[in-house]
Image (cartoon, rainbow, N blue to C red):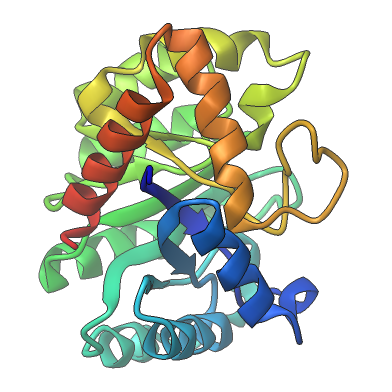
Length: 252
């Protein structure tokens, strides 16, 4: 059976309340043997660790998302939670200018979390929305020593190339299956094989043919099939390289 790795999901989301075991079972039945449950503030980071402790094939990240910067008190929770064995990265962190104009605070908190990741020897899961130039500038000035992934990549080929120069992994999600995903289709074709990850970002951004519905880790297989088609490779090959890459990135 093929093995797939959903490198970024949110099992802590309210949409999975009461159906988490069903979601895990669906994933396993579809060949999704690994998942990373991504925190975005203290509460969800704790919940992600609880999920990781409950399910042997689930791992967790901890961090403060740019949209949650208003919750900032201190970074003690990151240091404390990273003591858990199944915490594999800092994230998701980064910049999001779509909803907020408080760019300076976002930048400061992002840079601080990069430094913490370096100190704790963890990779970084990066969220970037409407902020590519500032994102690249920060990454050039603040070296991420243990690797980083541009999660749910939705930017241009030029941004991808600049990120790759800095050592990025590129993670593609459901939008690459959408009919209007012209730029992402080219990105999917051009990402180097050793830098490609796949994810759902569930419960958001369900791929075709589930678009508009609640996403779940099992659907990462749909994204994988589309990327394999675009890269003109077998689904077996796509599953292997993305699973191997995710294991390497997260040190699993």
